[in-house]
Length: 500
Image 1 (cartoon, rainbow, N blue to C red):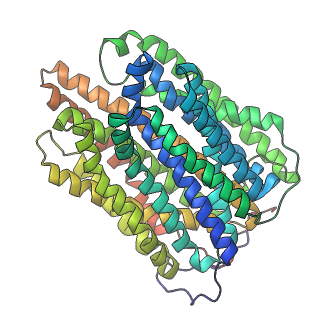
Image 2 (image 1 turned 30 degrees about the vertical axis):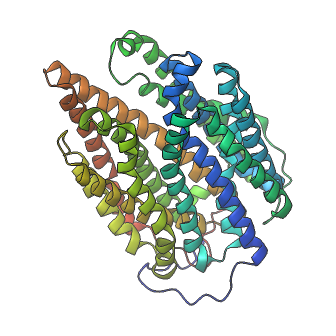
Image 3 (image 1 turned 180 degrees about the horizontal axis):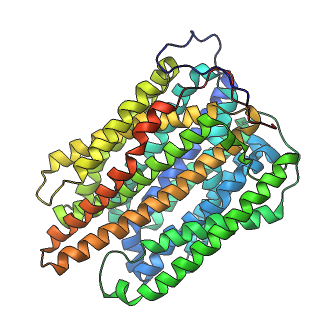
């Protein structure tokens, strides 16, 4: 394996000598705006589901398909984006992504009932799945190495601010206008992004003319889709109650079958990619894992995603069911952390560009693990101001990690593997996030049921369940402390995998 000499992470890099061209910079801003709209749309659905249950006359189990179908579609489409971006280029991929997203939003707006609304969510997810890999691949292709941290900081702003604004916006719209207006507000923004992007975005990087392997798509769909669906069944109905108990047998059967099919199909998918990458025609080129910096960064990212997505799912349940806050107050508790995470992104990116990874990853890991342990000690009487401080500090700790991990992982790859690396990172985030949510919801429910059986009051039982789930996240995050010392910022060159 050939290695470019990596920096130590403790010495400043040389002063920049080039910058992003004006046209390329415009492309990045357009992609950032489109990604913001897509993520904003996704974060509004959780708040809208209670209203949809009433307006559409559906059950909570039915309503869950509005998020499950979206998540499944993302899991199926994202692994294909590495090939699609190389095959069709930046402009065509952007137009396809925003056209699908806009079409799905229009169908959702006009949907007369639940079945078509689920279809609309699938169409939306097909476009959303392309956007983040497209953004990261384009950024890595056109931004010089010395400025990538700063640019990835912009991505962090999008990934943090959209989830911060989404629930608050949805709450206001739902209370005053109704659920259809969520899509009515997003649709014109999406259409404008599509029109402007079609006018100004141009292809960047090299194109591939390899033929798509249909068998790989099928195996990818059953592999990643089966695993994500199986994981979603772990937490299905995991809030206690008779309905969850009565469907336990069916859920267990579905869980085992889905995970079994998913694991088997994923193993065949990996074998198929190893064979196809010898001729450069793999749907998802797995040679990215031969590069130590990428493999370590993705592993670190997976652990943090598991802990992060699980925690932000359990925390609102703790705040509402144990502390007794309203949905609006819950949103206000987590809002400062999300805003701090987004606003800190560009500054963290500049630190990465100048000083490398360790100065960010080491304090990030220590802070994240320490605060998750603090979460594991919360009670139903914990003051709200203390919850705001803890959540904000945790968000800052995660912000310190995500930007350098994104940048170091993709920066260690040769240009020809950027799109495949972006697809891998997005897929890992999707699967690890689904695992974190499923496992922590299940652990929380087990703790709740145990406390209820012991005669504890309902708020105390919810607090006990949440503490158990947070403890799992704290233990799971401990390996990131070791990983923080091992990951280095790539030099301006890249590590080239054998046989590439």
